[in-house]
Image (cartoon, rainbow, N blue to C red; front, side, top):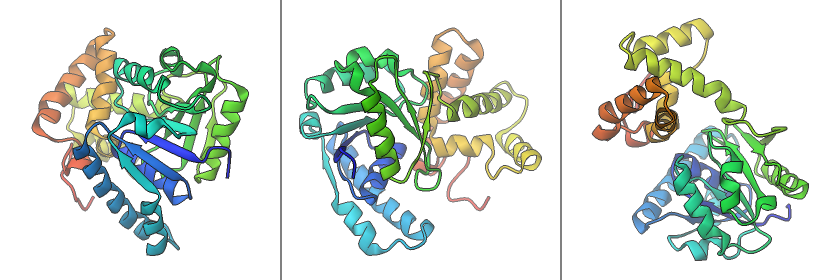
Length: 291
């Protein structure tokens, strides 16, 4: 076990819940924080669901192991309680820079002096968040892919201020929770994975929002032509349309007119109708589905 022993995860959305469960599954005690008791209740349901998924999809997993995993997860809606004993705090808040900056400003006075802070941000550069942390040498980006127990990459990206010791500890932690560390040499919005994935999803979104094709046609084309198991809109539903919307809307606010139209299209046709992707049972497709 590394010098990181007590882990706190802030946020219990789709990926946050996966990070929490995977970390506990590998033997760490994890404190889980979200902003309300209702969200904590939903998170507990997510953990129970993940226990069943692990039993089904990870050979050799036992109910004894999944129950022990659940026992290693504690929950709270009190931020000070969540932070007070943490060696590592992983933030999975929505992809809104002002929200993340405000959260880090709060954490700065609550976390132990030695604690490392890590953002799971999909696109924001850690250097835009680092000044809010009050500990730029102990701040880093640690980004996971969806379905973490199978697609087990952990992209690790520091700033010019991140210490070598911080980076080494986070690399070791990633290995200890069963991840393959993907270390970037310098900051890049989107890391490796999303630098490749987001242009694909945007291109697919533009085809639909601009009226050229429907989601089924786009997905069918991609899967037949590339032998990919998922089409872009199936990936949208896995990622979650709230996350996708926040990323696209940010580009729209920065002046990209096509992104502005696409974010509005997703909001009006999906988010406003309660269609958030697989997590809500419907996004571009209804779930469960056969193909």
